[in-house]
Length: 603
Image 1 (cartoon, rainbow, N blue to C red):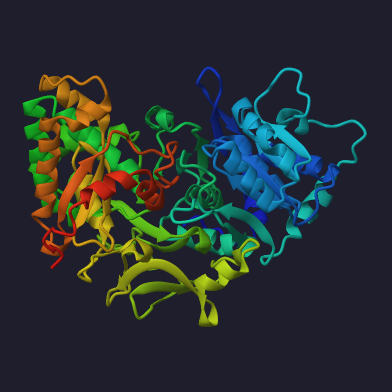
Image 2 (tube, rainbow, N blue to C red; image 1 turned 180 degrees about the vertical axis):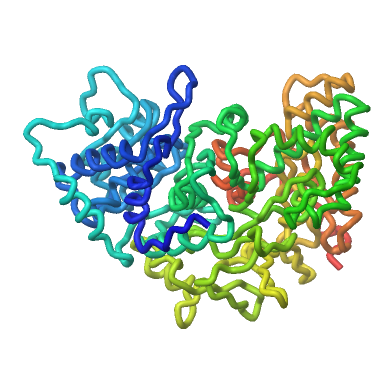
């Protein structure tokens, strides 16, 4: 334990960072790729200067300031500065289109927006006329700015400005109350239009104080901030690191993560399941290039499966065979993560037993957690003290859980949100009597208090025969294959289930070259009879472990790799099923074209 007491506001977290005495509280890379440190004292000065600039512009308590940026130190400085003066920040995903950004700016009524690059500025410029924006601040330097304020200039002393003295500034920072609105985080909208989740200082603070208390994090720890800070999971991790006086290194581009891991050598890694799935696919793909490597990996994974309980309990097996496998295989996988990570954590979406078991079989315990934007975010989390494979851990002490009659998880506690911004009807729809929040997830709780999330309530498929199918576990089994990047089951209100498969084209194209298959386009490749047969075998293997009504009777391999940028995935790599259903409506219709005469196979 770090020894720090709980905090009541995010502003107390800022003061804790500022008073930590660290010479390298934050890390960032310069143009030469060298990591630079920002001291706790510098953090205080930068936040104070930026906050003063906002005050000079007449920003008042409760006003909204938007943030449109990749992960970088300026993001966190802005966040702290906005909250320091009692304003509300509105983080926006940099991958959104100009039209989507404009919608969020209009809905939030933001008076200021801080953007990272010229590209982000141009998105804002295209929609600015219809917003309440008064100032646009850019982090990157541009020549001869006209309607843009330079971030660096705002951090300098400004002649004629009446700066707040340290004592006055600190008093302002400490004036924040737990019930004050801190941020509007717009949900990614997997099933409908984005909604602004209203989180208070208190809801975030209580979650930050409790979520990592059993991990023992302290000043020697570090993490890399690479998941989008516009998402609550990444923001919560950074807050937790700052709470424990640990170091945060900013990685603005996901493709730079592997190199950053090698250079920073963090002790903590939090990833969405897709990060772990891609690591596994990468390891298996690399071993597939050599029959010898493939046999060694299979042997090591098979051997390690017998020591999973030891790994999850934090014990290093003493078996000589395990030590040999560790030297040949397991240690190489750990080195890919930097070699110093002591805690691997997964959140944002279900990890899946198969992925969790595979990592445990190579000597890595991935502790899964669960939460929502609306719960600030952590509801439950496996910890080094209490953990159980397949569960998402035990709920935090301040979070009450109960199950509705249909199995939906309901939660209550101080970290639950205030409601959706300017959407009283939608807010009321998620709240039941006595302050219970409807999560939309189907769950179960075992006798020891461990929570298990089985599926999304709105994503359950119901066949025309009345059978309910939980798609996520089945999709997870398909994604164990190196050749499957994403899979989306369909078949709601149909006689049987089918699946759309988005391939891992790098692996598929490599396989095709080895097999002498040539294709001018990806559409031609996925239509190739041998490729179809290859995926047919993958689907049949997964079907072999399913109940008859769950099996995928038909499938289609699509010619696109689903991505966040393409709009098929949320920032936490969940499927946007509504988008996929609309985009592939004709394909789905073709899967069921003869349904009227097909035998009912849902029983």
